Length: 195
Image (tube, rainbow, N blue to C red; front, side, top):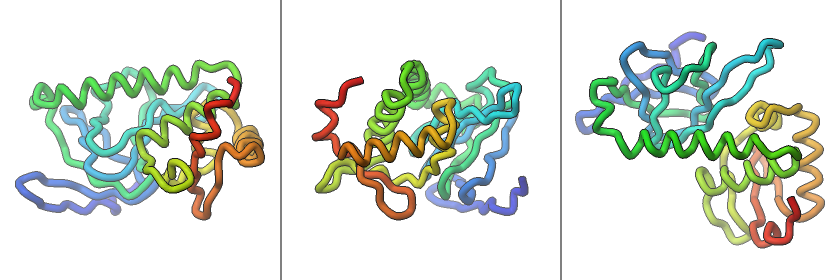
C-alpha cells in the first residue's frame, strides 16, 4: 500500500504522522508507533489466507513489530490515525504503555477463548465500549465504525455469523444499531444476559 496518506506534522517537539483509514503503518526495524489519535488493528493471515486480528489499539497505546513474534504482521488503521515514532532505545520511558499493551493482549485473548459466538460478541462489545466508547443516554456508544467483517476477523468467525448475532442482540434489546456502523450497547440489559 502507498504511503501517500502520510503527512508529517510538527507539534510541541513531537513529530507526528497522519494515516488515512484502511492504510498500513510501516513496520520499522528499531522503532514502535505510539498512537496519538485513532484506532489501529494488528493482523496476520492464517494458512488458508483468512485474516486474523490479533489486537485493537487506541490513543496512548504502542504498536509495532518489536512487540510481536507473529508472521506475517501488519498494522492497519481502522480510522484516521495520528502516530508518533518511538525509538526502541526510549522504550524504557513507556513502561505504563507497555504494561497496558500486555494487559490488552490478554483481555483480547480471553474474549476469543469463549466457546459460543454470542458470548464472544457480547464480551467484545463490552470491551469496545469500555476502551473506545462513551456514555450516552441509552447506554454506551461504540463510535467506532467496524464492519461485520472486521468483527468477524477479530473473533475468528464469519461475517454472516456476526450479522446474525448482532441482529439477534438488537431483537433482544441488548444493542441499538445507528447509521455509519455505530452501536449503542445497552448495559442495563446485559445484567440478565446468560452466557
